[in-house]
Every structure is written in C-alpha cells, then in structure tokens.
Image (tube, rainbow, N blue to C red):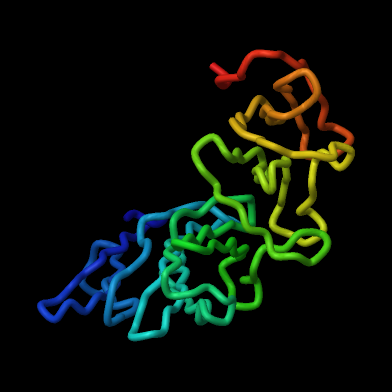
Length: 231
C-alpha cells in the first residue's frame, strides 16, 4: 500500500506473527512500524487529511488490539491506543475508512455489533462517532447506503437520512419532520448535493436531494413504483 512517498508492507513470519514495515525505497529509510501476534485488519486504506497522507490499520497482539496511523509524508507512525478503550470488541474488524477533510470515519463491523470511530490521526482526536444528542452512531454503510460530499458523510440510520462531518454538533438527522422511516437508500453524490430515496412515504417512494442541512433536504418527487436507483 503506497502512503504518500512511502510504502507499507505487511509481513508474516513462520510463527504466524504479523508485522508492518514502512519504506521510502532506501535501506536506511526502511523500518519496522509494529508487530502483533495475530492478523492485521487493514493496511490498505490511504487518504489525504490536513495535507498529510495517512493510513490506518488495527493490529492484534493476544487479546489486545491497537489502532495505528501512519503518516506517509513524515514517515511517523502513531499508536492511537487500544480499541477496547472505545468498546470495540474482538470480533469487530476494520472494514473501511471514509475521509472527511481533516477527519476520517473508521468503520468496524462484527457479527452482532458495529462501531464508527472518528479520528484526525491523533490519540486525543480519536473517539466513537456520536450524534448531536451524544448517542453513539451505529450504521451499516453498505454499497449505495452512503455517500461522501465535500467534508460530509451522508448515510442511513434507523430508516432516516443522516449526515455527519465527524463532529458532535455536525451529526444530525436530515428529515426531522418525517415521523416514520422504513428505508433510506441509494445515496448518490450530485454536484455539491446528494440524492437518495425513501420507502414508506405517503404515495410510495420519494426521491430526495440534500445539501447537508435539514432545511436544504427536500423531496423532488414521489412515485408509486419502486425506485431502482440513479443511473
């Protein structure tokens, strides 16, 4: 995985012990980042944040799992602490990373649980994503079930459309007047806005557009037939 001007390398020895190395292509610029006793969740997610190319991975050592960030510009690696500190359990693996400007959302999913961490690549800037009421945000970000526009992530939660910029006050529901949410899906970035559709509204399926605010989230049309998606 290329990270800025460096490459990350995952290595497993004959004793099934895993390690992560970083190199700038020279012997003196090649060094060990971290070592664990078992598997690495992700070493392949790269993004640009605050003018630094960063990558994240989670490394297990016995019952302990540690989250790491690697700066591909400076060559520095940072331990972001134990995942248990954020109540992310052993069966939850790091599935993906979504980038929102200077913050990123890390998606952890297990068989019966899922968590979303927001991080700026530092220990103090890494925490469980919460909504404006202070409740943890849990959402399966399936293909079509989310979209990134600028520094905002649009996603479905409990049948309603939500948006987050990674902050407490910036994580809000976009349809507060809509009482019942059955299905919100097929998010599609459209210029500086996002399209999606909902099921269960009066008259059938509604096609919406949003600029990331409740006031700027409106219904474009309501149709009786099933909306299959945006071409």
